[in-house]
Length: 102
Image 1 (cartoon, rainbow, N blue to C red):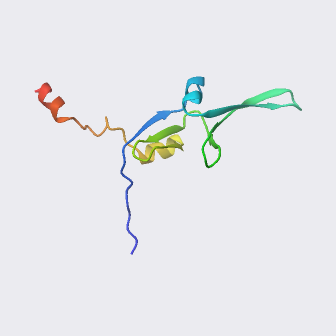
Image 2: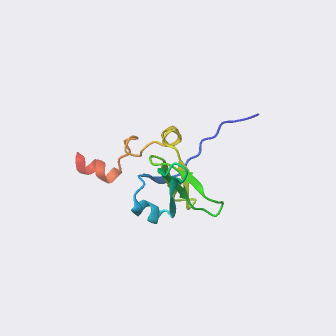
Image 3: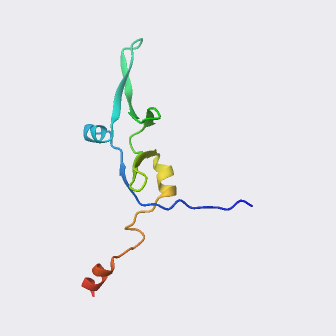
């Protein structure tokens, strides 16, 4: 019998903005694409380097750092919003913080 399971682990995430700082921090290669026939710049491509090969990443995608697994995943904005909920949205309050507010 098949059962449904949920993946539960703590992770931090950062939305990719194409900045040089993020490219340096996450080992992302920036590739400028030119059309020599038309003599125009067609845009910029980004690739997250990994041991399994380069993974295409777009501005607006999420870099999810799994603290317990020690890996960085690339998820589209849609995939990220379906899989993850911000800890702030869950209204998780530490017991010490709760006492200070009263």
